[in-house]
Amino acid sequence: MEPGQTTSDVGPRADRERKLAELKALGVDPYPADAHRTHLTQEVRDRYGELEGTTATIAGRLMARRGHGKLLFLDVQDRTGKLQALVDSSLLGPLEPRSGALGFENVDRLVDRGDLVEVTGEVTTSRRGEISLMASRVRMLAKAIEPLPDAWHGVTDPETLVRKRYLQSIVEPETRARFAVVSELLFGIRSFLHDRGFLEFQTPVLQPLYGGGKARPFTTHVKALGRDYYLAISHELYLKRLVIAGFEDVFTIGRYFRNEGIDKTHNPEFSMLETMSAFHGYEFNMDLTEALYKHLAADVVEKPVIEVRGRPVSLVGDWRRASMVELVREACDVDFREVTTLDEAERILTRHGAPSQPTVGHALVALFEHVVEETLVEPTIVHGHPVEISPLAKATADDPRYVERFEVFVGGTEQGDNWTELNDPVELRRRFTAEQDRRRAGDDDEAHPLDFEFIEAMEHGMPPTTGLGPGIERLAMLLTETDDIGDVIYFPLVRPLPPPTA
Image (cartoon, rainbow, N blue to C red; front, side, top):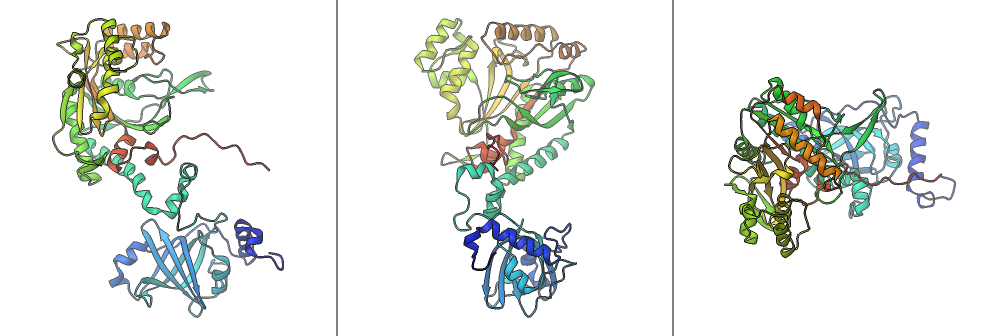
């Protein structure tokens, strides 16, 4: 600063940049390549009885600093918590530029809240009985040029929460727990399936033809091949190729890209588990799905009972299983098995305020989504979907208008989609062709494309097969009791800001 200037005259960033320049002028590297941490802060607390009087080195972000004459109090935060460091001018070593050790005056003048620091010292307690380190050495690990948000108020601006979530994680470390659940779920799912003999495969994200679901894809261009490819909306058709090849129980946990709206339950990029099990029907996956959810809730996240809409919901109790027709009949007093014409279905939709649909099957689904879905708070397996919305699922033996498919609902939200796979290549070709007819007629712009290579693979014979596909973020939302997918996706898709002006 120039003579007569104060910190407020130049602003906090300029003041920190000045301190950065001064550290460099002293010969201190403000961004060294290594650290020498020996203990996490919580470890020092937990093992205080055996560590008292010994030397420990902690490293983390400086979250608060207070001064009292020749004594500084530094609160250092790492991933496990905070620990107080006491910096006494008479005990701290001198400036050692080569090693990066700072003298007392350097710490007092050049170290700010938000800096990443390393503190070595004796494990002790303060006069107030707080477990602390009596510092003998302080190093700068990374000088923060931008100041942190106010410690008292935290991060409250919604725009900042989405675009700079790292700031909330720093000043409100307890919020990290929500995002850690996703990692715990991935580990728990893999362990659960590995224990049951499943093999995990990496399937293509870049696909020459999208498929395995009904969604608008993202398109990209592969320069080396000179053609457009699609980002995966599903990995299902590749898992089925593996089943055809003889891998009987397979799964992938992958990234999915669907060019759809962004709201509290949808993000265009998300994660999902998909499995395929040969020589089984969809009842097998009903049992597998229920067992997986109960394992994740009770054993991985250790939250067998969650709160949904102010009421407790047990994930480890008995799950209801009911057909879509049955649930609509209970809610609307209409049996869609007896609805045979689109005109009749349209009158039912109008009576219940649901939107018009192209087929009777679509009408059943629309009524279910409009009237029933949000009422399914307790864990419920809904099966028997119309064939019109399930081109890859096997028809039920008693009524070919419906397929062996089920979805899991908890808290009024769909958690995953599962079915017995269609393994008749002739029927599959017919359904794919019907999908294309609806697309050309303008009735369904999300119709499944006609995949000749997949049909050819199936013509070599695919055994009876069933697959499941719960969304990872939906699971995390459920187990962290949030209704906003943005609370469990650390980097949600947002509109980019314009570049800063010069």
